[in-house]
Length: 123
Image 1 (cartoon, one colour):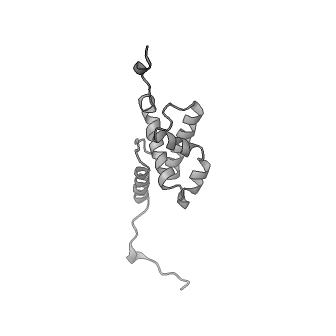
Image 2: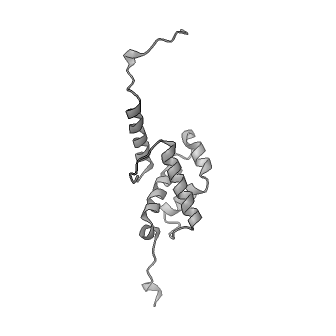
Image 3: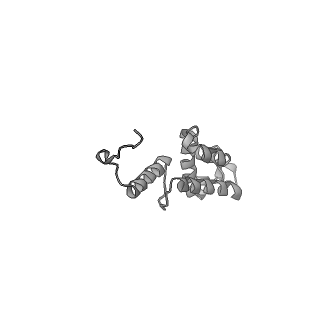
């Protein structure tokens, strides 16, 4: 068998769900790394986020060892949990998670009506 006929399986072929999670986590890594609202998440996931970034950008093309998969799965679950998102939806981008969290907040909290503001007694 020649080298040219060897089929190389990528993560996209073997585990597309892992690649999707890596794409979402890469969005956090690239766009929210310095955002103070994500500080604890970024610090805690100091291994998972760079790993997800390298997988998302095809720097790593083979599926990681089980510990690497565990890091990515945990980081993804934590991201959803931090925003109270319990949906089984397959999110493609971190912005979709933020939108889902905003929708959940709108359902729980009544809309703010400026006419109903209570005067501060300290004034």
